[in-house]
Length: 612
Image (tube, rainbow, N blue to C red; front, side):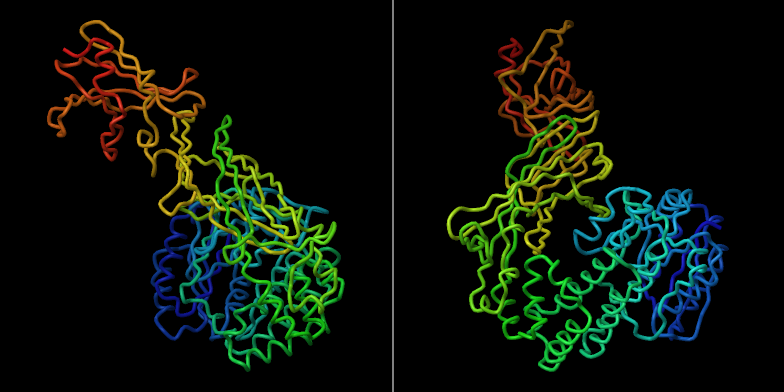
């Protein structure tokens, strides 16, 4: 038995059908994996449904336990029952890609990986795990870092004997929030070999289905802060050391504590706000070393400084004057270079529709924070060294799977002159058609592009706006079109899934040729506009001769033709017997493509003496 899939259930509803369908579709033989459903005392018919599912699936087992109120206990029971070399924890409304188990196991098992962290896709959001899941790799020794086990969801493959050897279990209790953080941190602390499966999507996390029982947590302030304190204390407890400890503590501090102090806090009731202010200050002063503040990016550092000092009115003011900075990335140029699409972008930082700027004082750049500056140190306001490190990195996302990857991108920062220093990032990304070590092949899918920007601790992930023309390539028989989609975002379509070849180009009328071919037939050679050619392409199409001045199709004369692309460029070639009369020349490819007039009328025919 290679893999045991453990699925806790509780009043699972329709989402259970999605889980079953994805497990039934696995390419790994059912003799090599088992499914363990552990029902947490569902009061509805969930257990009966599970029994019916298992009745005709020998590899499926069902257990029911007394209700524990959380997924931790069912997962632990499943681990105890597991017979597989690896155990995977699924939620009861998610799904796997069909080759998920087979490919992830094949990557990690030969190396004895203690944990396999596979690419996870959220049904919402563009940037989930982009920095971790770029490619397949095996990580050991000094290359191990706690950030590589992020995001800390339990949707990973854990070596079963490894969990048992080190007694690694989920914390049990009815309302233990972020139990996966404790679990995965302990996993990492003992890991010797980790596999990162990033070349293809593995797990689809269905966000917002209404089946997440932790959604009620943030309603009760003290319970919420009890859980925040526990996870922050755990991060700093020494379960991991050195850089790992600093990263873990900083991540929990910024993501759990400082993240509470946003404009949205004002929308909560006064009691929640009071508890948040009181407990946050006490937690920081007790559990967060000052050196953690010093290592934070500028924007988080300022908030941390005020919070530690208990300057909560100043912190509220800082949130007001600090917020609203966003990016507006646009395409400045599209060009093909060999087998790569080169995407040039311009990403200015703006606020309220105006350029976002820092204040220049001599050689320094300072944050302009009216009403708060006298409460902050120079170190908290100074962004002189941070601004040159601003980046805007392009990413691509598969429109069908929602899986995304970062694209190799080079950024250059332009800082405005004068007392108000604006920031604009110019970037050049190279998107390889065939893929690379860190990006998949584009072929066989349609991709939407976005830009992930960072500036002094501010982060933005925005769609890449494009209002220009398309960039078309014929690559070894495949049509690849970069274009602006209906929402104004740059997209790349391959294989004419969305954008058709002939609607994305036209004919260079001045270079069209008509040559005698013998037997009363004529060879038409119609060069295509703005087509980048890689390798050799031959695609079927049709030439349509339509009587001039005639709008209908009943008198069209249609003959087979071919799109040819090689070292001589891209063109349509056809041999036709031209009937008497004057004809417009049109091209057509595929039943879904309407006849498209390409600008060649009787002129070409007259030049070839074909009008009779």
